[in-house]
Image 1 (cartoon, rainbow over the protein chains, first blue to last red):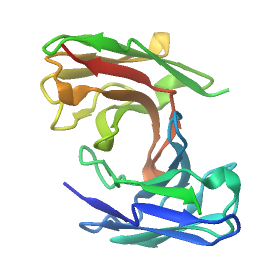
Image 2: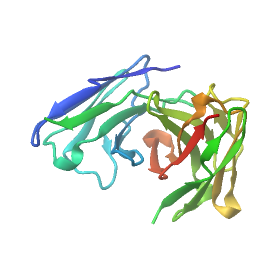
Image 3: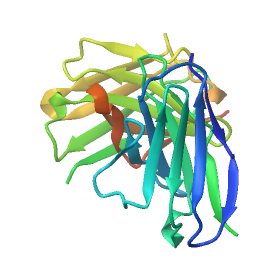
Amino acid sequence: DIQLTQSPSFLSASVGDRVTITCRASQDISNYLAWYQQKPGKAPKLLIYAASTLQSGVPSRFSGSGSGTEFTLTVTSLQPEDFATYYCQQLDRYPSLTFGGGTKVEIK
Amino acid sequence: EVQLVESGGGSVQPGGSLRLSCAASGFTFSNYNMNWVRQTPGKGLEWVSYITGSTNIIFYADSVKGRFTISRDNAENSLFLQMSSLGDEDTAVYYCVRAVGGTGRAFDVWGQGTLVTVSS
């Protein structure tokens, strides 16, 4: 199975900060990586797919990059509504679909 | 509005069975592959099962293979997950999730989730 390692697992930041989250895959997954945001008590929400394509309706302060085994999610200017947990997911092939362990972004 | 609404969760004893349902609306259900994903506080998000729009391809995670059965009724715009031989490790919130494929593959629409608790 392909393993995804997210770092950091916890991040404390202030409104307006630039935040970067890393996701490393245990093997090459091309650009078949998605990023999701989850708020407490809610379902995950798709932010980015194909490693760098912004989902419709998602603010442009979110961006993704990377290919192969290393990927990043960046929020250029953190807003109050961005405090949440972020997950990466690899979709290289079924049935081995996996999610990263999550990064919780909290207010400093 | 594109929507997925799960139902059927609840409390069940170890070894018991439960059937989850997911009602889809706002899109042509038969055109989309669908998944079940579960989430526990300890293990995070775990993909459970996948079914193509035409039902001819099905996959399961190793952790549920042989115990869970995914199915769909395109005429009723519904997705199902029959769960049997349930154990403590199956306690989770279960999400019904729409998949988009090809080069832009992702899980683009999620239901609100239904809680399954396995406990004696």
